[in-house]
Image (cartoon, rainbow, N blue to C red; front, side):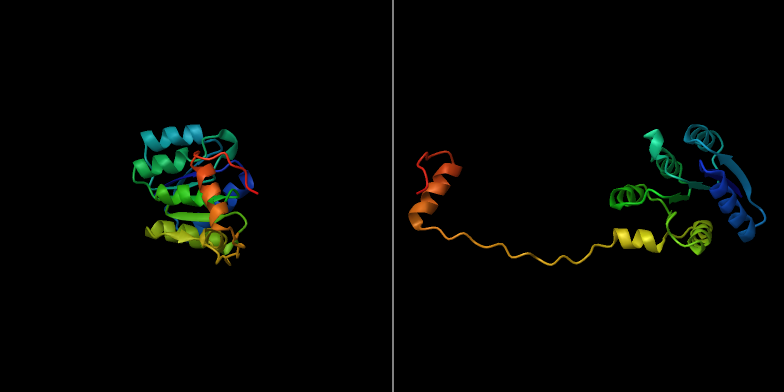
Length: 166
């Protein structure tokens, strides 16, 4: 199986590749520090799987997941840039696995195993961010107006009255 890893930190790349090697012995891993050559490889010689960091500094952070979706390649995003908007975009791009770099180490392995099985997976950090919290409604006091005051306010809102409120 061919896997492309896009990661700009060598220590993280080695952790991911070591984890892959502990899961399977038949992986051929291609490594890129920048998204441009990885994107070229995805288009010219599609891999079986892609594991990518989101390259925030390049302003093209979703190019790799987009290419994976277009080419029907299972994709794992492993990034420190996790927020509701990023998760929403990844979900729209059908990213199979999202693991935050703030998550526990076992989440890397769990994510890779789910990726290889074709299953979706979100680490606890991502689940926490993507789960809406219950919001306690705040009571706003209602203004009490006389019928005459209400008539003036409605007239002002509609642009039909210039009478001042007394």
